[in-house]
Image (cartoon, rainbow, N blue to C red):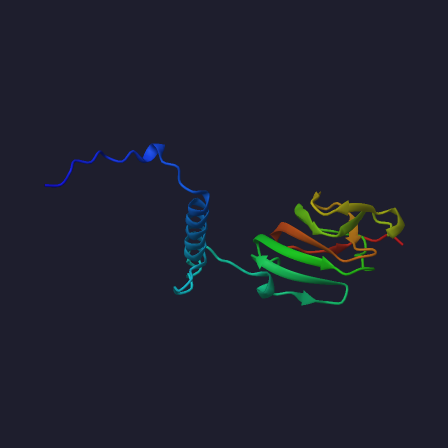
Length: 169
C-alpha cells in the first residue's frame, strides 16, 4: 500500500528565474514563428474584390520633365472623382491658370510653393510644408510648383479636370 501524500500547493512554490526566462523566450520564439509564418505557406494578400492594394513600386508614374503624375483612382478627363499624385521636380512651377471645380490637395513630402493671381511671380509664392492641406477654389487663378527640392502632392477633384491658362503679361 502506498503512503498517503498531500497535494502539492503550486501557488507557494518558488520557480527559479532561469526557468521562467527560458519559458518566456520559448513562448516568444513560438509566437514570432507563428506571426512570421515560419515553416508555412506565404499568407495570401487581401481579396482584390474587396481591397485593391497598390504598392509604391507599382504606382504608374508618368514624367513630363517638370513633374511626374500618377492617377490612383478615376480619370481626370472624365466626369467623376479622381485621385492624382503629382511630384513637382525642383525648379519647376506652373503658370497662372484655373480649374472649373474645387480641388483638394494634401502635401505628402517636401515643400510645395503656391501663388495666386494672374501675374506670375515665383518670388511671392508661399511655402506649404508636408502635412498641409489646401483647397484650390473653382476658377481661382493660381500657380504652384517646387523651388529647391522635389515635392509630392495628392490631388482629389471632380472631372473633367481642365486647366485654363490665365496669365496676365
